Length: 104
Image (cartoon, rainbow, N blue to C red; front, side, top):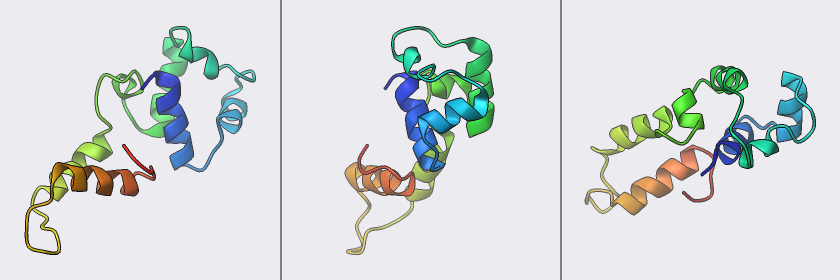
């Protein structure tokens, strides 16, 4: 996933459109979408990381979302309804649901 897609997902989780995010930050229309094709501005990348409470490395796709990591750790000791350990697919589905995504 590229930086734009990560930001788009984070914005969706806050119920804000990309355009509204651009307005809130004083960006021109399409500014964030331009990050699909070019390197993001480091200062603006840092501002967005602070806004979403994630690291710049997460926005760049270099590390997992810390919330997902915490959820995964919490699910390590959870059993399914039939008393078996959750499969990785089960964990992925639960995390996707809790993060507001339809799938991973």
